[in-house]
Amino acid sequence: MAVTFYDVNAPSGLKKLDDHLLTRSYITGYQASKDDLTVYGALSSAPSAEYVNVSRWYNHIDALLRISGVSGEGCGVSVEGSAPISEEAIATPPGSDPKATAAADDDDDVDLFGEETEEEKKAAEERAAAVKASGKKKESGKSSVLLDVKPWDDETDMKKLEEAVRSVQMEGLHWGASKLVPVGYGIKKLQIMLSIVDDLVSVDSLIEEHLTVEPVNEYVQSCDIVAFNKICSSRSPAADSISEGGLWTEKWETQSNTSDANYKKALGQNGIGSSTRRKPSMP
Image 1 (cartoon, rainbow, N blue to C red):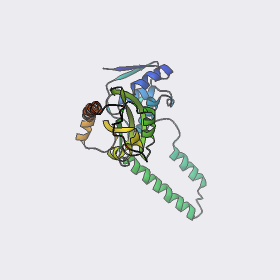
Image 2: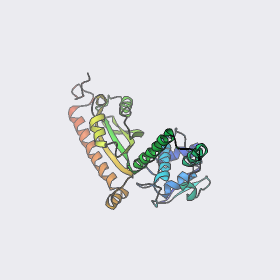
Image 3: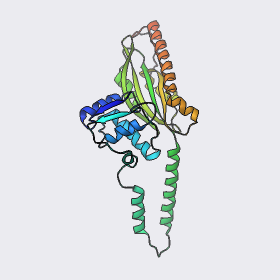
Image 4: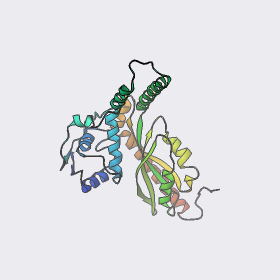
């Protein structure tokens, strides 16, 4: 079923698009597609950081276009109230080429009749190393993850809980949008999105070594993976078919629902807000 967006360059249109992307990594489906290109092309400029979800999505699509492109077909979307932009214009974003500019600057500084100095040799080696390093980084896959973060009881300060979660910082980890979701007994869990560089961050290690240990576990009782989607990586065709079909997401959602049931059962047995809850002692 086709999705229609209206006047995405106006605040009202951006707000609706932001709400649409609150629980989605892409406009439709589980991978970047022509639907994303349609909406991306309709935006006259990068959205304001005020629209957190649209800004996160826009930067991701912009990076894909510069690195590997977008090949998914999508389900079909339309944007009304904005001037259409061709796919060729999207695939080749406007702007000056920094490499070409650098090359032009280098040509101006080159002495064709002189010998290469030690400084010039060193600069050339550094440029070659930088190009090689950037090529390696492009090969690294990225993943989009949706986490359920559960508090100890109904007395836990959810604002401080989110601050504690976002205080965990490491190379290759980027926190995204979040919201509070009711669980039961007056308790809400934090549902938060994050993106990771697969070669740098392990979600299991993130949970076991950072989110459920001191000082964060003063507020966090447990964490569960709700959805795990690959953004760009080298995978086998079988793995691609699983990701595109949404089976990974369904699998994690089933585990999350089971975890919620066990979580509420434990709360009912121990009582919430009582002095008997097992909460980590802080030094």
